[in-house]
Image (cartoon, rainbow, N blue to C red):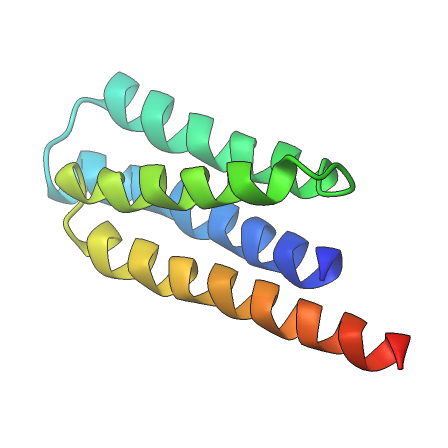
Length: 105
């Protein structure tokens, strides 16, 4: 399960980082604001991907998914992308638990 969740977080970090130039160039968001919010969330994704060995990291990742959806107020496309990654997060948890249960038999 940790590998699936880490993959989701790293891919999500890339997408969030790519939202910075879109926010600045296309939507006219202040560069410092876009860089701080999106850059901070991207870094948090990468750090959390490394901390998934701890039990508290999975619920923290769920909170992170909500924060990423909230970036849609800055870049409206992030509402969709955040929801998509949230669905991938839930699916990774479900598939990971299913695989762990199958391996335990």
